[in-house]
Image (cartoon, helix red, strand yellow):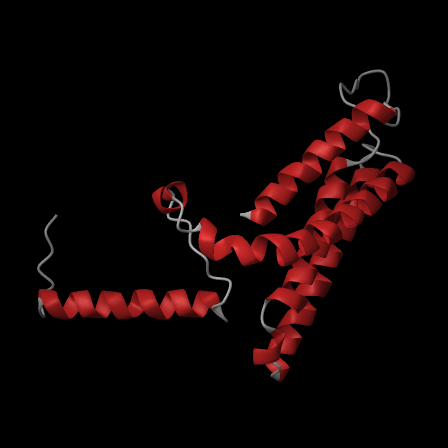
Length: 181
């Protein structure tokens, strides 16, 4: 949830920056008119915010002390390399397609990186300790918000829990699986 809030804040800061700086996009000819400013590139800023946050989350938040196996380390490194490559490709595509100048893309990338690091630290240091309390709020219960931050390999946990529950229900229904439709 805090990641989503961070993305929204990142986009809001981009919008404000564009309207303060008011630098136009590069000229593409007489037939194309842009209605929005180009500095900083919002695609570049978003992708670098995303990449840096995911890297920090992967290496710091995903319980590194509990999973130092070779496959875990390889998975983390591949994910980090993958999101950086994706951010680079998106950034380059903005220049290649002539939607932004190199400077607009670099500024967007730097702004995304600069915003991702403190947002991750704020989430890690300030918000994470509040998660157990937040999930008890009625609004959180209504939206089925839960705190899985202390569960290592949460996807595996959810998968095995769902599989176990399905098997238990199947046993109760019997061999024919009498389901009420």
